Length: 231
Picture 1 (cartoon, rainbow, N blue to C red):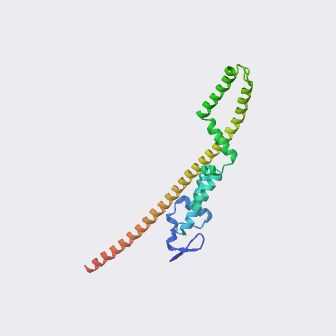
Picture 2 (tube, rainbow, N blue to C red):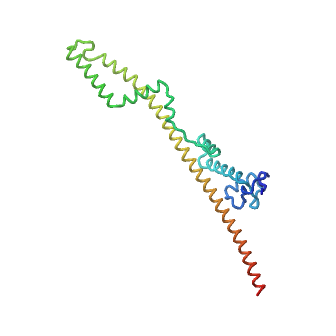
Picture 3 (cartoon, rainbow, N blue to C red):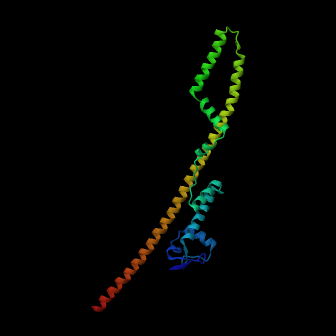
């Protein structure tokens, strides 16, 4: 069996039939805004109801968050297409450039005790060689002008390289935070949709139970009336 939707005028299977009187009022208001003639005696299909549920969620986001940005729009599109919204930023590490790999290595080594102890040993060796072994007449006597130049160059080059690595790590952290936000938002919206569907099922079951009880009452009344006639 089929029925005709009062919204689109198209025919749908009977299993898709949704009476207007079991649709939640906020969604019913949105339907009436598009179709003023739609009332509680009308009906629509489950697919059409889901479209208005998505529209209700979009309106909710606009009221609560304001104008939909790229993240909210991406979440709504994922809900419609039933796809995942989360990406793994760590996968980008497989496609690093040579400069990015060097920056990560420098940042990792420059922030370790290995670097600190190695550099401290280098300084002591340099100072000891010039002061004690070469008696302050070597290639860099006190006050170690060449050593100061080397230290300045190392600091001037190391700082930007470490900042490059930190900026890339900060970008990765921002992407992870955006992923977490989109996953949480999608979960909240799916829970809302789940509540809508559960409410629909409960109301539909209640409606069916009421109809069944009415039929049973009618049958009981018929039986009682027959007994009364016989008696």
